Length: 124
Length: 124
Image (cartoon, rainbow over all chains, first blue to last red; front, top):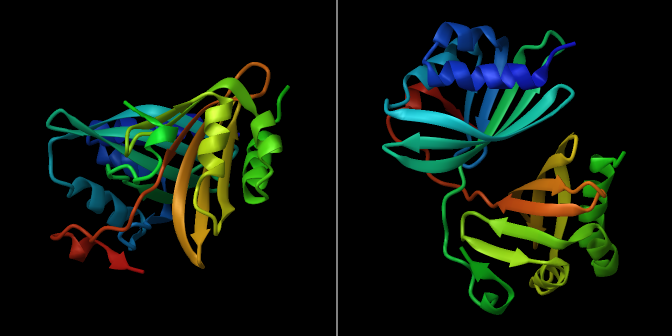
């Protein structure tokens, strides 16, 4: 049985080391990548490797949380550029051969606290 | 052993039905809730129930994904207000008694696709 956790750890390790051959080997031929916030989509291993390899250099990733459940997993990463980190949340679906078939990620940005609930929260 | 999946399903079911007693019963006394995007924090069961019960009415939640792993889980919900849905991503940590001890959520908003990668993606 596939160790989903190890596959996802390898995904981020390959990304960090720009090992695009190793990265591609983790993906299904017809991997489907989606960013719901921009409604961008990339189809297929070759296109998805190219999409990642083309991302402007200077970034690295640390895994903050990895939650794996059968053929699904989620990571909360810290995407670091020039020392500044941004959270990234990625959902993974593996196929029956243990390849990553579907990836959906989210890039939440800071926003001001909604007014009217200052008495219910503290800030950190 | 606690069924983390069932606890998290109950959390959203109680929220949807405004069953704040049932909701509170799922939480550790010292539950810690954080929203990294606003850097808001709520400490303790009573305060966290109040925070949720005070949220302006008209919302409901559907679970899009639930990934559970030991004492951790993640949900991707659709938070629906007046027919419009927004994704919410919530990380749960249970304590050794099966109560929810830590909740961290993210509310990613739509943003324009970054320029310069139109040739690498399609839109949906």
